[in-house]
Image (cartoon, rainbow, N blue to C red; front, side, top):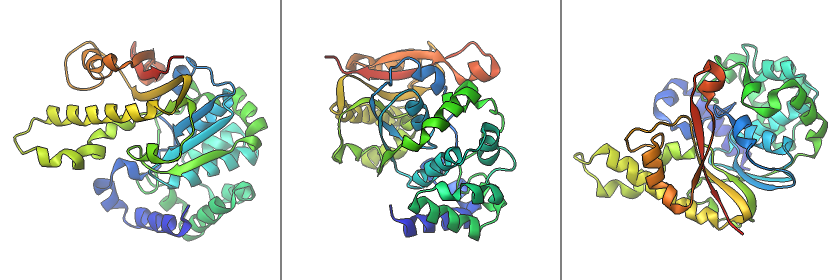
Amino acid sequence: MDINKDLQTVDNLINNREHNRWNLSNLTWIYPFTNENIKAFFSNFDFQDKKCLTILSGGNFVFDMYLKGANEITTFDVNPLTYYFFHLKKAAIQADFTLEEFKEFFLFQKRYNKKQFEYLKPYLDAESYEFWDFIFKKYDEEEIKSDKSLFHQYYKGLEPLEKFITYLSKENYNILKEKINNLKINFIEEDIRTLYQHNLDTYDFIYFSNIIEYANDLFYEKIKNNISEKTNLDYVDEYCLNLYRELMNEYKNFLNPDGYLVARMVSFIYDGPGSHLNSNKFRQKLFGKYGFKDVTFPSLDNIICYIDEEAVGITYQKKL
């Protein structure tokens, strides 16, 4: 970690908020809580004593995997600020915050309260202590918690987080609190296009969440010389999605026998046409013939709004 560089990033994000809101990539901010129904999706897999590789993001995937029995978790993110945010969450659990205090600090209107931060500071690792202590001393609470400064958004309408994030039910939060001291992660600051070039281990479960939604951001530079103003946008989207799928072939090499690679989470599905992953036909064309299968589960709208709708994880299993 480069603490000085990361603190300069924070200064830029907070001091240039209005510019950032319209001009920076969605990959720049921290996403505090997932908008995926990982509680239902992860229930399809056995994590006991498993070795996992996952995008770090807001740390929710790590906490749920660990709660379900994963014994080694390697994380990565193009955004190094996620490392410090993960340790802030971990410290709050170690500091014996109740579930309501945890939610109050990270979610509700009183979030990032300086008085609460003083209580959890002793539980931070050295780098995260330096990072957050600098922020809480330099900025007031409103600047820290403003939408699209450090954080992409807050899920104000999604307060029943325990419905789709396992560790945020009262029972599971208390279980996590009892074992949290033993949770350690390996963190790699890298984006998905080059992560496989690192000295990675092999894993039982590899999770890429919804990174594919940024396929155009990831691959546009690679294809821009081959397109013109007359190029159909659907063609560009499909071309970038194909490049993403080809990238998944690199990560298949890091699976243990019977291990799973989750290439993409799709928020809802339908049977109609279209060159996007919500279409069953297009998803089968893009992934199905390459050994990927759908794992379906209730969508977030199903959980929150009681809409009869399914989501899907595009999943590859390495056979023995």
